[in-house]
Length: 461
Ligand SMILES: [Zn+2]
Image 1 (cartoon, rainbow, N blue to C red):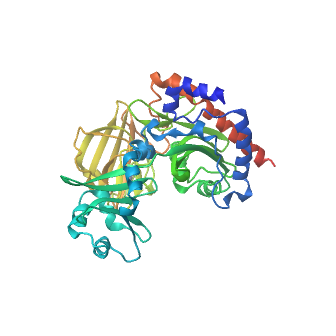
Image 2 (image 1 turned 120 degrees about the horizontal axis):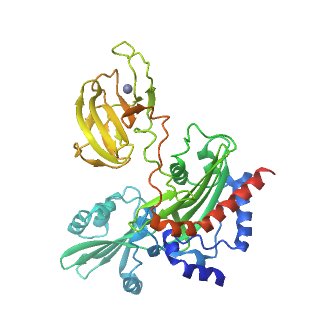
Image 3 (image 1 turned 90 degrees about the vertical axis):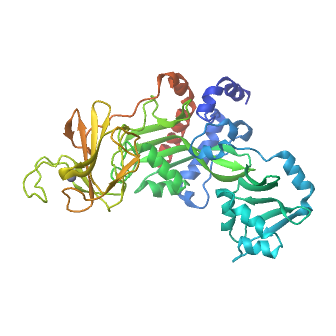
């Protein structure tokens, strides 16, 4: 045990960046991990809640304030524990608090009527802000706690927005103010692994992962694996992720810390890392970005209606004319995303293209998006755009038989097939983080190896 504590003390920097969860993998825990995970990927794994590996908590639980602000973590980043004085006061005068339980059909104004609370108070309160507005959407079974002052007015009101967030409205001399109190949360490491017969989502569910985590897993590897086309029976995955607990009760999942995906015998690994500027990204074991410089497609859920083809008969002109791009059929108004970070080199109308945007991505690459119904607001020639940013909407302006996006990809000004061009990886981990990263991921690498061993042993039984 003391060894692990030493480790934590010694590597506190790596700990906060990699979120502290690589520190536990002792030999003893390997054994218990083996037991639980076997159950997890065994045949009965889909019965009820996923068994996860609970570690010795004092060693693993990192206070939320200790962690980097990242997606879900951001929700807890500003966690302020309940004000102890207020809580003490609350307990002291428990009898002064009125607890109102919402029944079916109740409205906030109705409840105020029933309990003889001043109408002007609720009118002011629900207009305070977005959090307070949630009071108008209370559901049956929820509770409202109200403290009244001597004149029967509301001195304080509390309402649980979630298992860890409580809305607090307090009367001050300047009027009502609202706070959101957040209970302290703990993050615990959990594991899941699965073998795929047909779809990632089925296997993920069987392994006890929520759909949300399965989506995140698919996102991490989505740059290298097309989950609609590339998945084969025999593929497998393992994930090290966080679960969020509040007062010993699980309230949600955190982030994927590390994951492995074996697709057609090729192993992909990814590790989460947060840099000093707060940007979090996944990198492989060598520090290469999982993310590519370009998205696979500029529109979601669209069907390819015409491929890159240098000898295509044009549907409107009815003569052989090279189709130097890919067409994505999608309803008018479908958002179009910039496939890479870049600058708008052209935004306007161009004959056959109709409304078109051309993006320059550094000196080598450019992309073109044609037939748009309209452009995204606030974008001009010269504007910078980020990968994934919406730049316009599908339409049928220019020479188009129906609504679709015409997408071109050029390398050194030569048209290439965007579906087959080898897309460069996004920038790797900056050099100054390299040593920290490579050192920090070691325990996660070991955990993934352990999970893989267990899976392989299980599969060969
Ligand atoms: Zn086209």
